[in-house]
Image 1 (cartoon, each protein chain N blue to C red):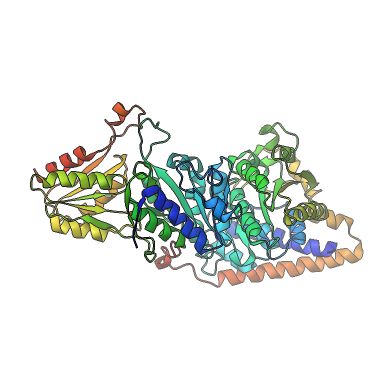
Image 2 (image 1 turned 90 degrees about the vertical axis):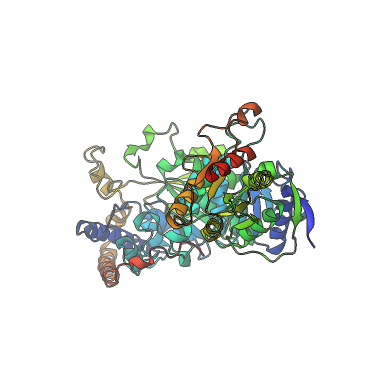
Length: 311
Length: 325
C-alpha cells in the first residue's frame, strides 16, 4: 500500500462526507448527520490489516468505516437520503446503518452500546474457529459507558478476538474528553482489564495499521482483546448543525494543518501531487455518480413500513 | 411417552434438547455452567456439553446480552439467562435499543435469533428487586416475542419453540411454579410461535390469565363451579404474537371478561386485553371488563404484606362475581 492508495481511500471518505453536507444544506438529507472529517486515517489504516471474514462495528460517526470496509457508496447515500435502494431499506439512516454483505455489523447511535454486540461477533468467531476478529470503533466519550466496560471485561475473561479502537478526537460530543476523565490516555484503562492498550497517531494510516496488526495477530491467535487508542482531531462539529461555539478560536484551523490528507499533500513531490490531483478528480466523479444513482431511486413505499419486523 | 416432571425439570430438558439439536446453540449467564444455575435449570448441562457450549459470564447483564445479540447476528443461536427478571432492567438498553431493532432497522438483512431466559414473580420474603412481573415492558417493544409458560409442558414446549424461532424471544418463567409437577410431552413436535389455550371450558365468564395466575384462575373457577358458575379460563401463553382470536371467541361464548395477572395494574398487559375487548368484543360483552392485578406498589418482602399485594384466587372469584352482578 502506498501513499496514493491511502490518499484515495481517505479522499473517498472525505469527499463523501463533504458531499453529504451539501446534500443536507440542499434539503436532500433528513435529520442530523455526524461526519468524520479529519478521522479518515483510522478506518483506512485498520482496513489494511483486516480480511473479508472479519467483523467491523462503528459509532454513529461511522460512514468512514463503512466505506473503508467496501460498503457500496451509492447504497450508503441512498440510506442516508431515505431512498428505496438503501442499504437498510430506509430504516436506519446515517447513525445506525449496517451491511451484512460486508460484515459491517453496523453503526450505533447509542454511545458505547455497539461494543457488547461486537463482542458477540467475536464469540461467533471463537466458536466457529475461523480466526476472524471483531473490530469495534468507539469515540473517546464512549469509554465512560458501562456497556464498554462490561464488554471489555467479558471479552478479556473469555479471550475473545475483539479489538477496541478508540478514536480520540478530543471531544465527546460537545465536551472536552479531558474534562470527563482523570487518565491521561484512555488506553491506560486496558490495564484494568488485563489486556494490552496502545496509543497511536490516528492521523497516520501507517501507525494505525501497525498497531492494528499487533492487536489483530494477538486476537487471531486466541490471546484475547486489545485497545488501540488513535489520537486525532475532528474538523467539523459533533453533528451537522453544530456551530461549535465551545471550541477555541483557531483550533480547527490548526487541526487542518495536521489532518491526514493535508499531511500527504504537504509531503508530496511534483509527481505525487499530480497523481493526487488525478485521484481527487476520480473520487469526485465517483461520488457524483453515487449521488445520482441514489437520487434515481424512489422513496420507500409507506405500505412496506411493517415489513422486516419478524421472520 | 409423556413424563411427569417438575416445571424446572422441564426447562432443563428443553435446554438439553436445544444444545443437543444444534452445535451453534450456546448458553451463557451468571452461575449457569459449573454451579448448574441458581434454581437448577442447567443442572448437568456443563458436564454434558462443555465450556464451548455453556459457560459462566461475569455479573454484567448489559455485556452478555449484547454478546448474545452480536453472536446471534453472526451465526450462533445463543440463549442468555437473566437470573431474576428484575436484572433485565440493567440491560434494557441492549434489549430495547439493540436486540429488538436489529431485524427491522437493517431492512431484514441481519437477524437476531436469540432467547433471553428469565424467571419472575414474587416469592415469600423476596424483596422489590427480586419479585417483579415485567412482561409488559417487553410486550410494549416491537420486535420481541414474549412467552410466559404456566405449566411444565408449556415450559418445555414454549422454550423449544423459542430456541427454534428466528426472532428474539423473551421467555419469562414463573419462579413460584418451578416445583409444580405435570405431564410433559418430551417427544412432541416443536410448536409454532404463539397461540393461547382454553385450559378450562365454561359458559358464564371468561378469565384470561398467564403465568402464575393461570393455576390461580383455574382454582377460582373450581370454587365458583361449586355454586354453579362455570368459568372459562384462557391461558394467553404468548403476549407477542398475541392470539386475541382465542380471547374473542371465548368472550363470544361467555359475554363476560376478567383479565388476571400478577404484575401491577397500571399499564399492565391486562389493560391491552381490556382495550382490545372493548374495541373488538363490544357487542358480545354483557358487563364491563374487570382486571385483577397487583396494586401499584412495589413488592414488599414480608409475607403478611405480600398477601395484601399478590392476587390470589379470592380476587379472581370476586372479580368474576362482579361481572355477573
